[in-house]
Amino acid sequence: MGDNARKPVPPVAVLAAEAPARMKPSIYPEPFASRMAGRVKRPLGDLFGLTNFGVNLVHLAPGAVSALRHAHARQDEFVHVLQGRPTLCTDAGETLLAPGMCAGFKAGTGNAHCLRNDTAEEVLYLEVGDRTPGDEATYPDDDLRAVQGEGGWRFEHKDGTAY
Image 1 (cartoon, one colour):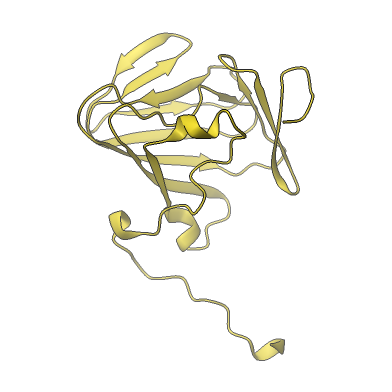
Image 2 (tube, helix red, strand yellow; image 1 turned 180 degrees about the vertical axis):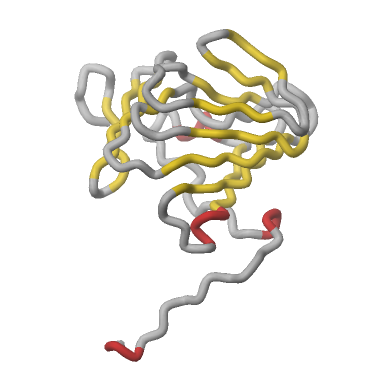
């Protein structure tokens, strides 16, 4: 295509609920990926070419979870509930959230977290995270560890063997 090829121009604005959903529902290996059934992520930041942080609009159907309970070594995370009443699960226990509530998770603290929809209503929230390279994630409830490299995330058992 040469130098005259045009790069796609990011939109000026979009209706978040109509943004395309992530093509692959989960990057976890099995048996963990299937546990993400009922979760739909719409990567909003990517639509605008954002590279320093990511923003996702996340939908949790009744009974769904946001992720395996995890803690990041280098990347901060933040969630803001827009609709529904998810349960925030952290090392401190369970906290019922409501629309308008938010929570943040500082990198390197080891405080593992996830959201769980225990209700019969849909949950909708914004998820924001930085994209600091070289991150690692630990999963205290599962035999899983994630290491971020040049090719993306690599998943291992806690003993270091690959999935």
